[in-house]
Amino acid sequence: MRINVVSFLDPRVYNGGGEMISRCLIEVGESRGYDIRLSAVRPRRRSLHDSPHLSLFIDVFNHAHSVKSLGAWRAFGDGFLEDAIARAPFVHLTNAYADVCNLPYLPCSGDRPNGCPVKPTLNVVRQFLMRDWSHDCFVQQPMVRRLYEQSALNVYLSPLHRRITESLLGSNRLPPSYILKPMIDTAQFFNEGRARDIEYLFVGVVGEAKGLSAMREQYGHTDIHLIGRCAPGVKPNFGRYLGPVSYDEVPRYMNRAKNFVFLPRWPEPQGRVVAEAALCGCRIIGNQNVGALSFDMDLADPRSYHGVENKFWIRLEELAQ
Image 1 (spheres, rainbow, N blue to C red):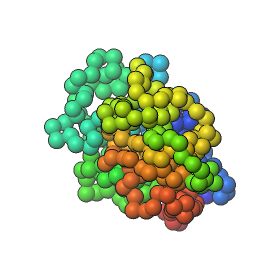
Image 2 (tube, one colour):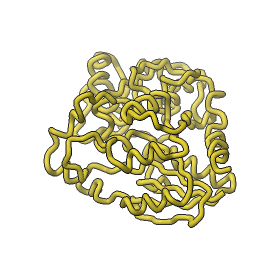
Image 3 (cartoon, rainbow, N blue to C red):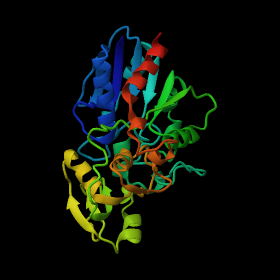
Image 4 (cartoon, rainbow, N blue to C red):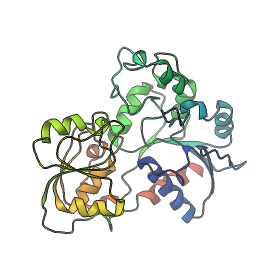
């Protein structure tokens, strides 16, 4: 089966949470014998089958928001996207909210009764990087709506991710959807049964998006351990900040922790770190913004994660027939 993949970031080069998911899916697809060609903006790459069986669009509008990255000025052109869409039926996968919002994270949390609450406050530089001088919700862009409304399948990372995205789209014409469960190596993340000497643990980017204020307010008086890089301008002034650690070390800390704290300020599409912590035996302290907690499954049961990648490709094979 010939597959065209169109992703703003090349998941073989970048290592964010979304890129880890995309890269894993591509690698599993290639192991199943698919001929996959990938086009990306960063770094620039254009490679398309002339007659693919299926196209897979991933985080098409995942524009960075810094001057160095040039933001949306390095986006896919509409002409390229139109050409890629015309070649075959397509599936649209989003690892975040970047394809419905051109702001970092989702600052409206999906509730925008009177338009975007943030754009009117942006300065000229930020508007320039976004190539957006309007106050309108990004979801009204014609190409955004086309990707969601004309796809053969929309893929989300949790029931929460689907619910919020579809509420923003506000359309009754949406195609079927598929929810991709967390893809976790259960041989790496499991309960080792060791003694637990850390009362509270957080792993992730230490910043407001991941719930810095809420953690400080609720657990600032405890010996909470914070692991991960800090968001720009953030200096933790509570708990015990351990800095970044290698991904291989994360299960060791999770197996030492009694409680895992994850209180994001804005909706997390999935928050796979919560599933990893549950597999390691932590009690999860989360909130309504954690996508992983919206699944109707036992996050601590390794059987919940068996065959996720292959089931995804089997569903896509059904579409290509």
